[in-house]
Image (cartoon, rainbow, N blue to C red):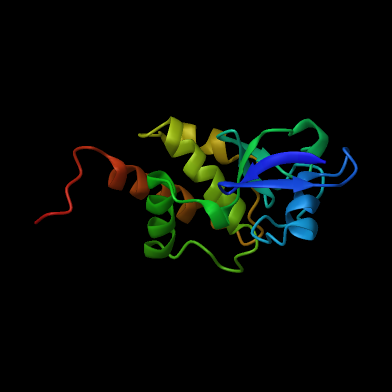
Length: 158
């Protein structure tokens, strides 16, 4: 049995240690936010956070995650996540939507560590997340909007 915390809940899974976290999440735990895109950690559709860092779950072996804290999009409640989610809606980022959970997870992780990212910061952080629809300009705009929303000088009062 391997024990880990997923979206704030203690979970135990009885699977082979080399099983990818993605399949544990989807097939064993019924958590379908992380998507299978490529299986080789090149597209980012399966991005989750493990102990606060964005990771491609298709390549994270469950046997190495004993005691880890795993967050998927279903369990995200952080302030950066909510800001990114709102910016995604306001800037109409998704087209087909397949990559969006990975994009949002990566963007929220970026803003959690870099609250005022430059275009270069965004490009570097998001480089491993592919969008087949090519919404990269809208993604960058939404990340900047979320950063502005999170800024301590930003006020929602008129």
